[in-house]
Image (cartoon, rainbow, N blue to C red):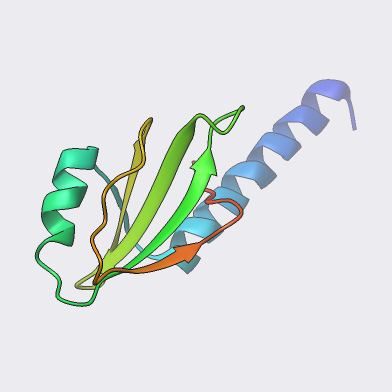
Length: 97
């Protein structure tokens, strides 16, 4: 295999891995923190996964399932989630693609 062919094969394999990750995780919806917070208010007993993100841990990433979809947001400041929200602290949240 030449260098160009090997690089092309590696890129194809990476794209296939990303596609598989998306299929496995279902539909991910990225939104602004304000909209995420509004959606959170619609649930009585919400589950939110939280992780520090960014190269220096300077962001917070949030995932929340809602009606068969998974919603995602990032914020530089921690979001106020409320007392009735079940929070799962994760080491990392990885988003495909």
